[in-house]
Structures are given as structure tokens and as C-alpha cells.
Image 1 (cartoon, one colour):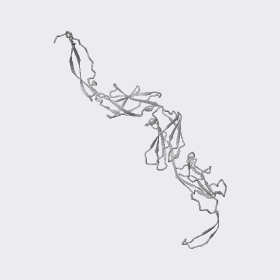
Image 2 (image 1 turned 60 degrees about the vertical axis):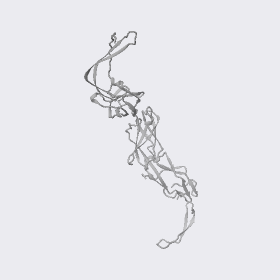
Image 3 (image 1 turned 180 degrees about the horizontal axis):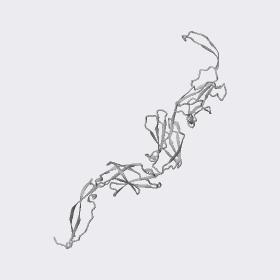
Image 4 (image 1 turned 90 degrees about the vertical axis):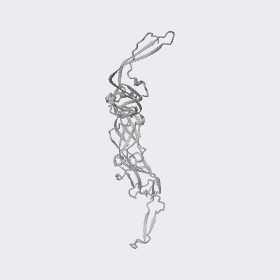
Length: 304
Length: 70
């Protein structure tokens, strides 16, 4: 070997493990030193190069981890006051505080710590944000430094004010339109998560949810769901993001009409009362009968 | 029971529906049937055994057999 000129170079390698995409990560001690690059310009030949690795061990421990992957987040919108629990589903989530591996979420430019539920599920509480116009990028980090873009976005909306529902009673068969009046209604959230929930007060059955319809900033509509075994009062709540339901606890009641008796009578009207039987009747909701196009007020009303 | 708009001698069916909330109307199939008020002028016999066996005949006007709605 002919000894030629030597060239020295200095290389910084913060994490050799990061270049190995197949690595699952793990702890390692740092070694600090220089890569000494020796180049030999051979006469008339191809230049040759040798690298001398001069590293000293240290007591500094470094933990490398695989970059996390986010498959789903829910919800994708929250109230401006913050506090919405956002579920993040993915892979390679870690929590090792002894190495500084503490998962975080970033909503636009605001960072919050994530609750580590498992290696495939994180939960973050959205921070407060008054910007209701933007769809903010949503990122996560396992160490608060290196951020992974998720491809998902998060938007904010002001807390809606609900003042009234009309009507507050409908058929147990469902299909009635319930209009809710108020302020600050938005259509800036995922339409699939804009829902109404009907929770029975007495019946021991789960609540039913149904998609709501946005009309304008002061009016929305909920179609009443059917499929109830019997009439009951309901707590009607609305969510714009599928998670945060309003706390107004408006009451909506279902009624059912079973039969009427008698169904015939003398033309002179001397046949006594026609009794309409059912469930959930209320005197305050203007129940009435119509015979041959003429409306008649009931002589009495009770729940059945 | 409201009287028939067509008068005391009207016989026939009219629309009959009910609302519980003042908005949605629930029609009854077949509606409501009016008939002329039957008048009973006499019955025979006017007395019989307490066992309930026997036939009592009613005499009068306005009797019909076509009341499908009861």
C-alpha cells in the first residue's frame, strides 16, 4: 500500500439507530468520537478510502424508538374552551418516563401531554383555542421533541346555546322533525358526528342517536327515532363532535295511540264520548280530535 | 260525540284523526261512522225467566246491520 495524503473529517451521528427502519428501538449507551476518513490517491488508479472509528464509551444512555403511526383520531373537533377527550388509535406508542418518552399531542401550535392507554391508544385533552375558522394540524410525539404528522386535523367551535325545542312531543313511531332554536350553531364539524341523542327516562333501554341537520346558526333539526317499545319521556341532547353533548337536558316525550272507541255513533251526536286510548298523552301539548274536517278539543286528558 | 255535519239523518263514514301534540295527525282507517239515531218503540216480551234464556224482540225504526266499526 502506497501511503498518500490523509484528509480528516468530522461526522455527527445523533442516532445511528434511526437509520435502521427495521429497528424496534431500545436503550443504548452513547459513544462519542470521530470518524477518521483516510483517502489515498493512488497513482493513476481509483482513489481509495478508509474510515477509522475512534469512539469512547460514555455513561449517557439513549433510547431510540420506532416512529409512531396514527390510524385514527376521534373526535376531530372540540369546544373552544378545550377539554375534549381525543382518542388516538395507532401503533408504536410508548411511555417510558425514565427515558423521557412521554407521549404528547399537538393541536396546531398547542402541545398537551397525552394519556398513554396502551401501545395502540392514546387519549389527549384538547387545549382551549378561540380560533374557530381553521382546521389545525394534529401531530403526536413520543418525546415532545420529534413530531409525527398524522394527516388528521382538528377544528374548534364555540359552545352552542340551545334555548328551545319544538315540538317537545312526537309519535313513538318516530320520523317527526324536532327543531332546536339557539345561537352559535356551526356546520364546521364532521357531519357524521353531528348527532342527537334520545335517552329514555324510565325505559331500561340504551339511548338512540340519530344524525342532526344543520339549518342555520340559530336553528337545527333532529329527526325523532322510532323503534321504541312504548311511550316514554326522553332527555334530548345534541353533539357537534360525537363526544361532547350539551347539558341543557331538554325533555322530549313519545306518545302512542292504540285505538278509539266507539268508532260509530248517532248522527245527532247523542252517543257519548269517543275514548282514544294510548300512552304518553299530555294536556299541555294541545291534543285534539278531527271529525270530518272539524277539530274538537278533548273533554278530558290523562296519560293513557 | 260531535253531531254529523250533514244532519241527524246522515249515514256514512267521515274522516277521523287524532293528534297528541297538535302537529302530527294520526288518522284512523275507516274513519268514523255516523248513523241515524235508532228509535225503540216497543219490546216483547217485557218479562222473562231470570236464567236469561229467551229472545227479546225490539220494535222501532232506524235499525241497521252494517256497522263494521262498532
